[in-house]
Amino acid sequence: MNRPDPTTDPTPYIRLALALSLGAAVSLGITRFAYGLLLPPMREDLGWSYTLAGAMNTFNAVGYLIGALATPWLMRRFSPMALLITGSLGASLFMALSGFFTAAAPLLAQRLLAGLASALVFIAGGLLAARLGARQPQRSGFLLGIYYGGTGLGIVISALGVPPVLAAAAQQPHGWAWAWWALALVCLLATALMAWPARVLANQSPPVASSVAGSARLFLVRDFGFALAGYAGFGVGYIGYMTFVIALLREQGSSSAAITIFYALLGLAVIASSRIWAGLLDRHRNGQALARLNALLGLAAIVPALTSSPPLVIASGLLFGGVFLSVVASTTALVRHNLPPAQWAAGISAFTIVFAAGQIVGPTVVGFIADGSSGAQGLREGLVFSAVALWIGAVLALRQRAL
Image (cartoon, rainbow, N blue to C red; front, side, top):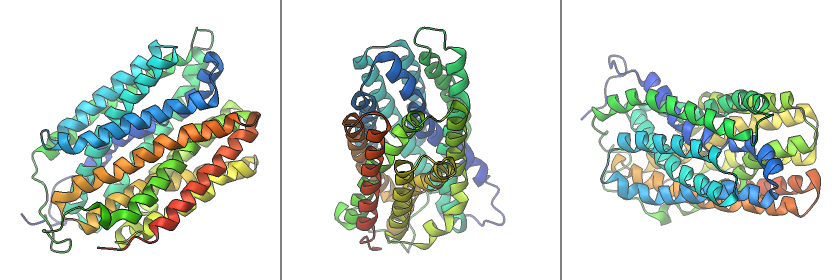
């Protein structure tokens, strides 16, 4: 099957990518990152240590790892479209259930199950976005960026929606539960809207292998070893920032309005990143894109550890938001550049597994570091750890060669 002529093909690629991006909004922007906004009120209400608060996202990452490990097996039995919708429904359910518990054990279980469901959504959506990109090679980096930029939409929705819900429920026992329920409703709406791209793409056959990649090439871990190691460093480093930066801003005395602005701008930067880094993703077939983006993230992560200056903190959020999901997109682009389409699912799953493994380490370690010192100082030290992990990942990714 030949690629369609981009001048005559009627397929609405950008609209399909935008609709698919709701999967990234659900799986990461809301299911994972909205917790950063809920961590301070939940910790205060339930008397958690920072280690336990970080463990909530560690368990989410454990579930994500389980989902990533199961996805190749599931892909052989179910279509990516079915996994996308089923996973999104599951994530919505487990988000809602998080509002019904106050004990740590069931909350940890809900975070684990939500992580499992979100892995199905994110991997299936990423595979479908890669297929879209293969049909529009001149815009493939842009289409991938649109999908991953959907995470920014989820962050913006969370930033604008969670604080008003928390304020309205302030007099209710465990008022943070209402925020979980509101976010679950948003996830359900996004799931309904994803039915259209799932239906359209179900009627299109996957793209055939290109002569550039070589149809006989199989995915082998050793071929991508340095990129995988660099991506693990990304998983360790970025999640510490996304889990605890809001708690640090609160400890430093930032107002609720300032935190809302910070987090909303971070989310908008994620959305804009699809355009900013598209050329970089299309240009490099080796680990250069992953290395450069990791290095920039390390810079963004260390700024709040060094200063509480509002302009510099805002700049940190803008830089972090403008880069971090493009790191994820860079690994999909690396797989797409170097493997035939039949091997994309295996490649994306492998990168998702090391991503999840890194995320298991990051939140609990940063929380443990934060508990070692009082107030904001411990959180600052945790972000230094995150920045160092990102820079180590950058050095490793530099050694990844094109196949």
